[in-house]
Image (cartoon, rainbow, N blue to C red; front, side, top):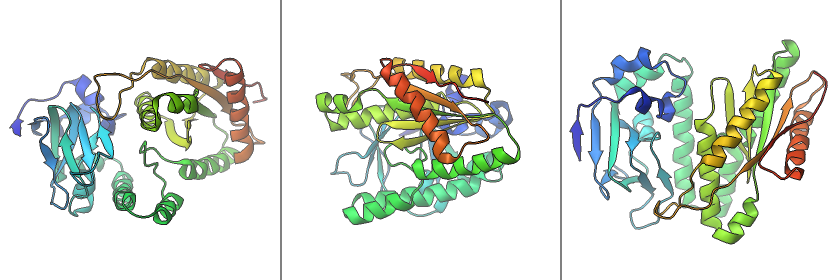
Length: 324
């Protein structure tokens, strides 16, 4: 492993998921002294049960996550993602091995720099601590029995495959938004998104390839979220995008932006990017919140629109007519 003092350009910074929506000029001074570390393919960046004092932004290359080095990887991290956050945030020993799948470049942040970045948001530190506890719990439960796994899924708000918020979190968020809407009506739209023919894809290419599709679609949707847009995994093949303060024409435009991004996304297996997997499409149903809505009727309206999109052949955005 080698360190260098080169700085990242704006495009590279904007590709980092943790910095999405951040005013880059306001934090550039904090990042200028952060080294860029080069890790060769096959090198171990982090060792399980060892201390870690840094957060790593993956700029290029890919990293594998192993609970044990002699077991298969449980996840692949791609450019834009971060690693090392659990042990840095809760100051415990690392919970997994992180190995370079390719030659990698990583921007390295120490603890002081990390907290300087998040202190601009009063709730950020709390959310990171909660996330650290949940993800560390998830790592331990992967090796435990099925009953423990069900217990974790019952109480977690984070989906294990995609790292997005899950249905339980989404429904809590929606219930709060509906109460808020009745007090002070502001535009709110829900996009129900389904991967077209995922079951057929799994039957043809295998279960692991299907998981890779879900992971890639989730990442693609997340990368195309903008301020005021929230994403969660809803079902096996479904996601929900919640648009805060979106007007009626804008919600369909957001849906089309997401549909196009997924259509163009390249899908690779967890093992190798030498042979890309077939691409997929999504269908989207759009609903805007009205005064009479409950959680159930709001989601049902989006599902009605999604059904119409599927009946129209899929790979499209559909919004039903309803009074505003």
